[in-house]
Image 1 (spheres, helix red, strand yellow):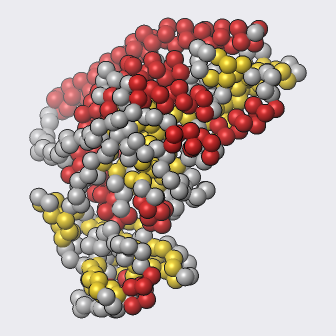
Image 2 (image 1 turned 90 degrees about the horizontal axis):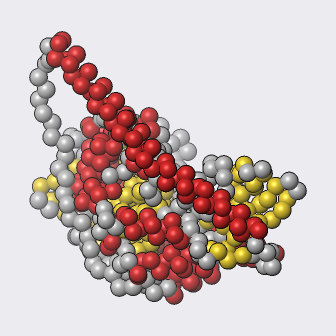
Length: 513
């Protein structure tokens, strides 16, 4: 590893006349070598010099001025490198100061110098709903959307680029400034997705470590300013119910910190169920007070590991969850998650096993089995059962028709828009349908709640007796929380059982018809 530790004291200037003629609009590119020779930041690279990490000091905010104290702890940020005609350049347009450089532009080109210790907070912005939003878990696959998904409101793309780690934010090697520039050019806001790895044990550990929250918050702001992100999406799932209160506090802290820097926030939540880890753990009402948008993942109605077959997202199930959730989340802040996928169920003697299919495969099934397709007017989707010897293949389809019914809920219930999982599972006909859909007239709406950093209080040493009592109280609270979770789970179990029975009966009725 090559490390740079010496801060360059003297000014280094270079006029890049070639860039003056090739720069695109506000794009500011400087040769990689020139940047490395000028920056005041410590950096490192891999042995092949194909990827660079720069360490940006933790930030200090005073009013609308961001102070970058070089003596503060540095957080790692992947250097925004792009290629032009085979040569490596650093894109410094969005976050020059954080990258440790400054520049001036004139008719001859760009002059590069070591960076200042301050920069301004970016201007706030207001989103226009209804939002048209897509999640992109594999951003290196396929080309970016060339046009907006819908012009009724703002458009958002969420690449899966970040994971929470026990030492800070873990970034994907695929974080790309070119991806961001391409989508911004096409009229999109870029809100990367952050996941908790869906690991309850790991999540419990980080939720108990508030000192780690600060590292997460600083690093997310740094990435947003350097790459030009406008917001983030929190995808935190499979969390112990006992951590519910801490999760709520964590989400409020991250969102509040981002808001101070005019960066938006959102969180994904499941529909209502009896699962403590996957549903009951979410305090949806509290999230509505701290984040900009709450995304209802209106999928999976029938989970992939279910042993009985059923739809991914039937209309009655989606509507029921929306109607319930708008009592906790204002409708204009609730974004409806829609699936670009479905499942093929191999059902053998009442035991089903699922395979996920992209919804773009629907057309092939409709062509091959058009005489066997059955429309379920209650579920608002097509159903197909294919005999396979001693088993049946069953599919509850997601296609443009079924999606259309769900999208109409946005206008009917004045929702904040839709968010599709996931980009690449649809075809051009679906994009065309969404573009032509009337999603209604939304409102400019943005949360402005600010949550301060956790206040550190001086802890007094406890006597052995008091410490013992404290441990007992903690165990009692945890036991009570688990008991409450079980109670709620039992309360919901009857509803889940009834719903399962209804789906099984519907399957039998459809097969008989």
